[in-house]
Length: 293
Image 1 (tube, rainbow, N blue to C red):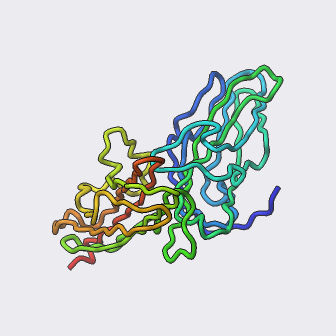
Image 2 (cartoon, rainbow, N blue to C red):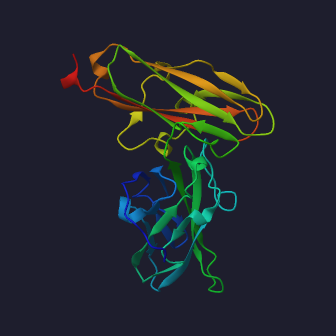
C-alpha cells in the first residue's frame, strides 16, 4: 500500500448513489461520480477526502469474491462528451485488488488517485473506468463498470502546453460576486496540439437535446437560465497545427433582482472538425441580495 498524505478537500459530485448498476446478482453503487479540482502531484485517498467509495452488494446466500481493477474507457466502458481518456489507468487504484462480500451483505472498496506532478496535466477532463468482475475460474462472468469523471485543477500561466490534441487554458472560468446588470470578461486559450489544422465549433453543451445535465453539473450549481448571457467572440475558430488562439468571453446578466444570489454553470463545448471535443466549465455566482446596492 502506498503511503498517503491528507490534502485539501476534493469537490465531488456523486451521481446515482441510491441507484445501482446491476449484472445479475452483482450490484454496485454509485454508478458514476465526478472528482473536481484534482491537483497533479498530490495523492488522494478518495474516501478520506470525500466520503465516496464503491459499495458492492451481495443478495445471494453464499459469499462472493470479486476482482477490482481500473481501465481506460477504450478498454472498458464509455465516456461523456467533452471528456478524454485518462492517459494511464494505473494513476487510480484500489486499496485491494479483490473484495469478498458475505451472504446478504455489502462491502466497500476504497479508491486512490495520483496524477503525476507535471504542468501539462492541469486543465484536464478525463474518465477512468472502475471494474468489479468475477474471479477467473470461479464460474462467474458477471462484471460492472463504474465511470469516474476526473477534472484536474484549472490553471493559467502555463509554462508548457496542456496535455492532449486539444488543450485549454484555463479549463474553468469563474465569475464571482457578479452584480446583475453589469458585464464581466474572460479569456480562454485554445491549443491545437495536433499535426494538422483544425476548425473548432464553440457551443453550449446544455442546449443540446441529448445532454444529461446531472452528468456535468457541480453540486449546488444549476444550469444558467440563458446561454446567451455568456457571449463569445467567435462561434468557430481555425487554428493551425501546433498553434493557439484566444476565445474571448463576456458575461452579461440582465438587471433583475431575481438574478441576485444564484450559482449557475455553463459548459462550453469545443468541437474540432475531426477528433474528440473538449469543454470549458463556466461558473457564475451572483452577488447576495443583502449586499446588493
